[in-house]
Image (cartoon, rainbow, N blue to C red):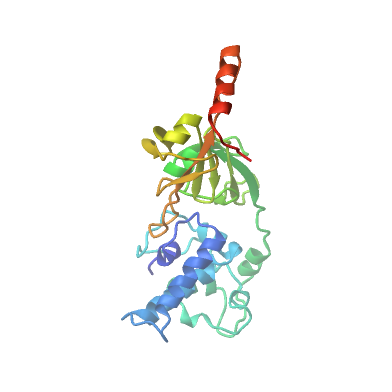
Length: 302
């Protein structure tokens, strides 16, 4: 029998969260639905997609599938682990709708439907003991990252609750509050969910995929226009500041924000926010100069 890589079938990474997993499933289900799809293998692909989501769409079933191991490759010859008699009660799996396992692959039936005979009757006391065994509790731990980690998709060493450390890949563009799941890494033996928290950045503020940078300029630069070297997450660039700029004016640098999470998800933008900084009048000479400006310019700011 061949191993089924359900993550590959849905075109997603193994650490994808349930919300994004559901979006990917719905997109593929629409694409391959036999009633509307013009794909040659639509019906076969539709069945594969549904089978994959039947398992991965439920956190408990997904955890049991992950326990088979992440090192198997799609299409590789596979035999169930010793003592595995099917991890799920198939009646629960089908939602009580009476759906039989016959519509799924041999891999699925062996892994998740093989513990039952055709009438839905359980065979063997081993299966009963397996289902009654309590699932290890999951844990949540905060993972603090820099904006550059999210931009570049860096890897970080994370110390686990049991004292060991592992390397964790930070998905590009991941949102604050989202979680990265480490299967079986909790101190309880369950899954460890790393919740992304963003360290305060000395220059940038984040809003979704966009980043914001305050740029202080002098009054004469605002009035006459100038050029300034601007920091971005990918390096510096020169930005032209138009004459007559006012405080709060936003200048967009397209595509210099955070990357999208997929190849079709566009990157965000960087917004440079103009802040006019006024020189202090600390000496009598400075104050005299401001008085002369007051008389010279017939202008009321309010």
